[in-house]
Image (cartoon, rainbow, N blue to C red; front, side, top):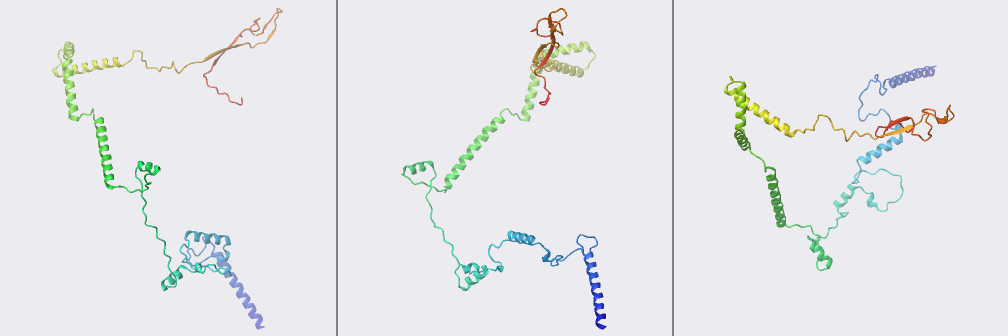
Length: 309
């Protein structure tokens, strides 16, 4: 009786634990808004390693070794299942173990071989190469430069560059005038123009005073200047403008029509009412006549017909 009651009590307790576990599994669901826990520690794992696929583990291990390889061999080697004896036992030792043996004097540190301190004779010019081919001199492969020759070459190149720059500068500013010189030249041109046009301006002034006798001295001078300027402007326009020039484009070279005319009969060759033969469309009695229908063909016209029709 006592054993039966203990068994029932244990069974109820197990059912309660299963309910708690099922509710916890429902609550802690990844991606659910009802999950009570949002953040996890670095060492905490939601899934066990047994649930991770073997392929994913192999890929992860390959990437880790590829990103951070053991070049110096300082990491501890993993356990392998091989029972064969290594050919070189020293290759199985770690780098740290080798350093300890070298420090204790049990192992010699490898000393790299020194390169021979030998300088080969070289050549600098093409003449030496030609002599070396003939056998009277040795081929020189040296790249050594003399500082004195280098400075002389640099000075010569700098001198040539300065001379070229000066010549180019003189060519550019050959017709250049300073602002003051340009103003002086403009004033001289105006003075010479007034002297040359003295008679022409006197004639314009006389004609203007006849038309406007009450005009002041300032108004007369301004009118004379304006009328003289307009006369020169019209004269320049007549010289520049072409008489045959019109404001219409010349399309004589571009608009050329390559026309062709074709003639044909739209009727049939048959016997007519009077007993003779002829075309039913125009009653022409000549079989090889050009035709009564005329068609104009423009060979330069765009052809919009497709290949399928």
